[in-house]
Figure 1 (cartoon, rainbow, N blue to C red):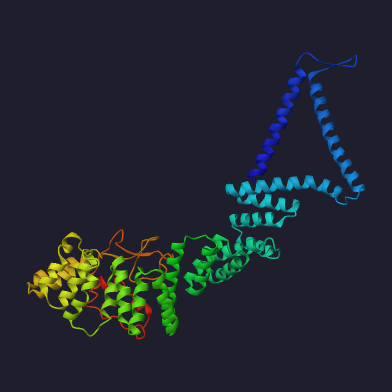
Figure 2: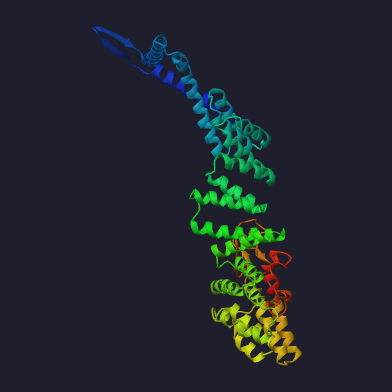
Length: 479
């Protein structure tokens, strides 16, 4: 409607301008003289302008007739398509002009105009890979998703446009929330163009969300081979997928696959906490504790974590507190000034009922960086030393409202998770969880101040654990 009014206004303005121009020329005094070959012609300004316009029109017609004559001559010489190409050239020019106008309207957010221009271009051009795609996008912008889906389905019938059609249907299903159908379409799009970056990302995300870890590893390998991902990133993500695959295999009772995947993950990313815990559980189950110690020490040196300490304790579950304290010394020496090491050593002394040593190990941590766990340790030390109940309760009260400390935090949406997982349960991002202090640390609550070696049970061997996910216990059980 608005475009029609604009065109009407333009027409009226041009007509008015022509009328004013003709009136001006009519009232202009003087004449135009043309001398040629001894002849002289005198014309009024208005007649001269009209004659010039007519001459230009005649010249343009002659050019077209000359082009037609050349086409006829070519046809007579055996070029059977010369005449049809002559007539189609003008049609093609109009079609491309309409196509360009449709693209501009699409970029400007004018869905209705884009639809009209796309329909016009479709009539003038026999290029569905161009016109149908714009028609589909214009229909989506105009809110007619069903019509867009129909167009994408039509594009499936042409080899040149099949990928565009599959990709369009995939996006439509994603917009509808139908991830199951979107995954199947993403797989088809991958088969058509295995090096298309956007398709690889979409397929990988959908496979991760559906916990198809084997399929996600194949997609990751394809992206790595296409050099669309740095090698170090690809290696880390492959390790994460291997850990997830090991967890799923163990849950399904496939211990052989769980073992191979866990060890592969640890070889690729020895500093990754969940992979190190799983690999250690494998070695403990195989009665090779030295290998478990080696794996856990390497991971602890990179990033001390309570899950690593719990796995280290499970190597010798029947030892006395004094024997455990002695066995942990090589681990404690790797990162002696790290808060996790200080709290771990405190727990070991508490288990051995050496409360002065526990206080020395904890140092000034409850005052310098108070967390629910460090304050709960102070409460345990105070009780062990025979402090008044009011003092113990004071420490516990502070522990209730203290920050939780380090947790598994999603770098994309900043949500805090009780345990590690390959994908964020909130935003479904892959490889976004890291062990760090939340941006806005919440109150821990006394339930989150559980101590990994004192108040929670020892990790069970891999073959006896309920799920491999229980092996990778995180802050929700320890802090």
